[in-house]
Length: 534
Image 1 (cartoon, rainbow, N blue to C red):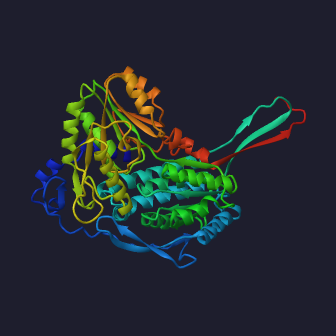
Image 2: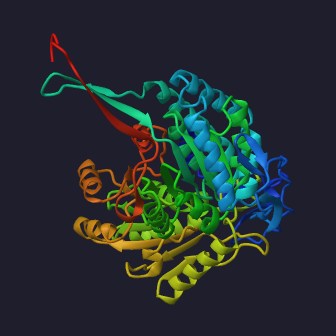
Image 3: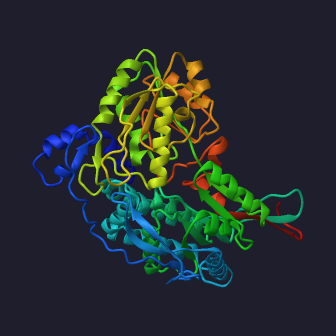
């Protein structure tokens, strides 16, 4: 259902001109601005939700940090403080790991029947649906993503993921294998123990689901470090998880900063497994800390610089819309964003003009307003980083076709930006910008675009737009990336594995492959006396 809603959002595309024409006299339309149109914005909408959970969640209880420290979490629309949140540190990680260890070694969760574990996950999914609107409002308030995106796509997808893993809980089993002799051999798949998980700020709840779902389905306990930019939604839904019957200590949530709480979790000697989603550079640090401590296994979902290839036979209008979505979705804050748009020279000029027009019609504004496509970036640091890349693109000789400036005077809004004449050696074509900046590059033939698409340290995803099945098959087998979308983009499903090649990470999230991250394999061999058969 959530995947269909995402596809619906793409196809509808929320054309700014159509929305403004249809609702010109409505109260919400007055606060929507095409970035090139001088329309006075209204005051930001007051979110229809209260923040009730700002402490650490340890052993089923909300508690203050050991040192009593807090940090502000900001509304990216206004730069105002939403709430002060307890700041976890190394001592708080110790407390959380101790609770998770006790819950695993002595508690009911790994000893509970898989069916009973699945029932708790199902009840949690029901509660997510019951509280869909409140959860979506918190996510939008703390993150800046459009409320329609959160409420219609992401929270339903969250519930779907929980039901998917609930379904797996009682279907995880080992094997009986034959041996060359009178021995009975069992292969057991056991929960790995205490899982440390570190999630990012761009999709707080979906990343929560990708990590928590498989770990709990397999019978593990968890200590999760949530991003300091977006701690509120994880705390809210974790309270619902306990209402669903999750035993104390099974899921512990620590808001905090990477160099303190994150480093303490990655290097903790009593954490049995680590999962991290974030930048490639931080992923390297996490991997080093895990190796230097107890050599815990680590799965990494890291950065990307995904090619989106428009072939000469493509339907240009459709390609423009999908390429636009591939880049600008979620304010461009996607690790798999189609951020290198390769266009065949025969359709390049037409594609460029239509892409420029589409970007200039993108609806930017308060993400709580109906019809808004693009809200603010997450924080000032990310805003400044994106603006530096835009400046770099201009200085390196790319042509700025649209955007390139701040949108408005308050909040972290950036105009949808399009560059043409982009060359492979420019920073905007090499680095992960993580913002609303589309780089359009020209290519001549298949061999050239394959070589250029693969000329990156990343390998997370790619897009191919063509009517020719032979062209599609050639490209999808040649491009070194973990996910390749053909004539679509960002189609996610609970069963589809997601992860990267090269420096985009290792291991897979979602689907059956994600379960392997949270299981140990144990061989048990016993002798057979006078067996009737082998």
